[in-house]
Length: 91
Image 1: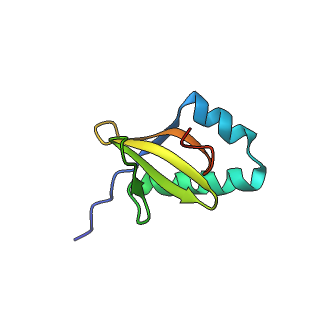
Image 2: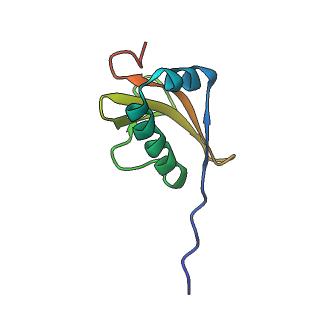
């Protein structure tokens, strides 16, 4: 018997997140895009942190950068709210 294939989530970026991603250097963009691909198959990976005071918002680290997102299980969507360097992302 084969194991069922887990659902793949679509990744959507807010305008703010897309704009920020476009401003990052190519190396950082590639690392963040690789992390987003991983979130498609597992939107709650080990190392993911729920943000205190922000219900439903999760965070993953990508080096010195952070991706802040919500998982919309009913639509199978990972919605990236913001991303950026750790000193700027929570402002």
